[in-house]
Image (cartoon, rainbow, N blue to C red; front, side):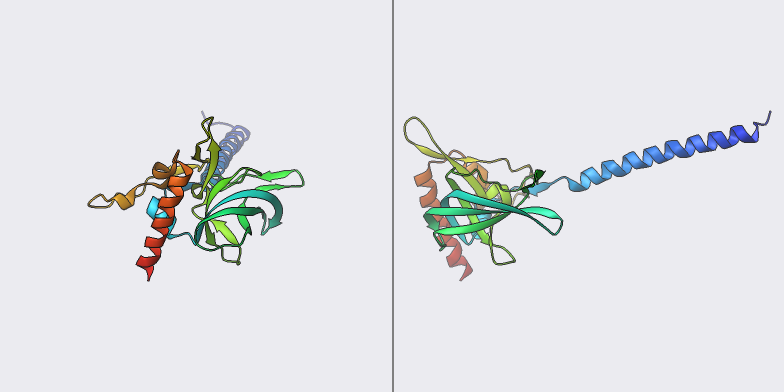
Length: 205
């Protein structure tokens, strides 16, 4: 028995609607994946070599604004200790994300500063003449002092990280920055970083 034309039309319309829903859901899923952020875990040597300065600084002020369709934040850091490299006493550092007029944007894996919290920061020049954090959130370590008065480094959330390809043969230079710096005592970490920075500059010459 042949289905009536009106019934066939209804079936075709239903299939088209279901297909549209499926394709729409697939498109949304793909869009979400495109906005996910996965970074390559930076090595200790790589973090030092790609930085123009390493400082201990306290974030004092921040300003956020819309730029090119996204929110950008500028944070003023008061440098308390120049571990390596040369910087001004007060510097402005640009990061992605922030809040403007009640609208917030969070960029996974991007560096963010807590005002008033002393922080070890790896800096590099940005394209527009300001400074940026080297390797985004992997380039900042907040300072925490325990009951005994010992100050140690604590990394912030850096988002999803992929391990870099292991060198052959394995080398000490491949040690990840987080593995070396996390929970390190501040004075010891600064001494080691200053030495590593100097060695990196010698290799570049």
